[in-house]
Length: 237
Image 1 (spheres, one colour):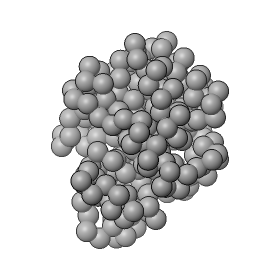
Image 2: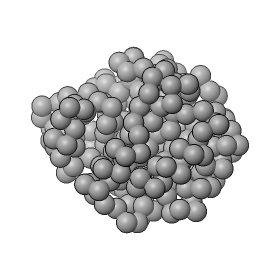
Image 3: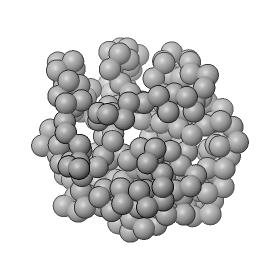
Image 4: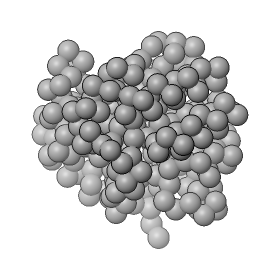
């Protein structure tokens, strides 16, 4: 279990691409086995939460996060894909569950900002996520409250989609906004459409982390996959 969430996020390496493993792509029947397998190489656990309204379907719950938090030394990033009317209640539950970083959607507006204040008061790091159809500029009101900005590269809540053509340009736009805000410590994340041919493009466009699904959990040679990931070059100077 992680006791200092701020230190855990601040300690993440910034000289290479981070490996953020999506629990949604693990073998859920053998979840403990899969989480044990990635423990030594994962930089972050990524756990999606969906309310069936903001996005299709329903996803994970606080008790699962608490159980994983009790077994891991890897920081947990919870992604709240929920409507504004419940984002503050959800934030409170996942703070208590032991997440190190909790992201709200920019589309949650003022409620999302209030939820981030709750996280900060509890010593939990905050993040903001943008849907693919949301203009990148919508992230600006959140930049002084977050340690991570995540851009979805596919339509929300549906697995197996191809990366949108404008995903890399959007990352570059977000990187420029982060630089302009004087927040170089913010981690820029790419989520969705993560494939062997797209990860180098996303890294070159400015991504500091990618949310790995089958590209991580589904690779029989995990050490080789992580070595490849960590060796990818970042944006040209």
